[in-house]
Image (cartoon, rainbow, N blue to C red; front, top):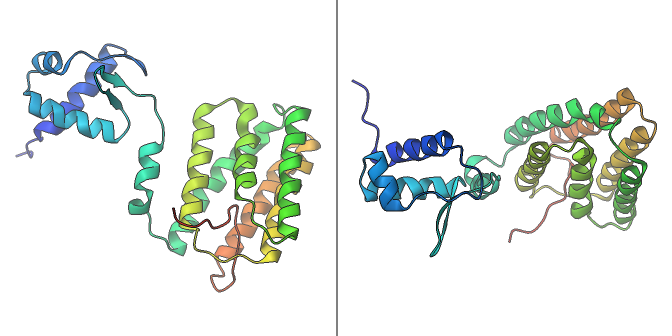
Length: 239
C-alpha cells in the first residue's frame, strides 16, 4: 500500500499544477487563499502549509496586503541552504570542481565568437587588477567573481550566468577556510590573464586549453591538502 501523501504536499502539487495550467508567469497574481482552497478542494490550513513551503523554495511570494504572486526563479533558496547541504571537506570540493570544470571548460570555446573588443579589455583590466593585488599580497575576490561572470555574458544566457555564479559562490563557501600564499595568489591571477590573452587571439582551442590548465592547477592544489592554496577564490570572513 502506497504511503498517504501529506496534505501540505498535495497543496504544493495542486498549486504548481494551477500555475502551469493557467500559464502564470513571474509577477502574476494568484487567486485569494479562500478561492484557491475551494477550487482545489482542500482546507485553508492545508493550502497555507503548501504555500509556506513553496515560498521557502522561491516559487511563490506573499506580499502583505496584496496577495500571493508567482516569483521569478533565483538560486537564493539554494544559497541559504548551502551550509547544510555540503560537507567542508576535500571530497565535496573535488566533486563540485568537477562539475564546474565541465560547465566552464565546455562552454568557453563558444565565447570566442561572441566577445567584443571592449569586453576583452574589461576582462584584461580585471586580470591585471588581480595581478597587481597579488603582488601586493592582497586578495581579489570581487575581481575574480566579476571576471567569471563577465566571461560568459556574451552568450546572453541568464540561466548560465546564474549557474556560474552559483558554482562560484558554493566553491567560495566550501573553500573559505583554506590558507593563502603570495605565490598562489599570483599564479591564480596569471591563470586569468592567460585566458584573456587566448581569448584575444580568437582561437577556441587556445581558450579552452587556457581554461583547462587553470582548473588542472586547482585540482592539483586540492590534491595536496598540506599545501595552502588559492583556487578561483579567496577566503572571506564569515558574516
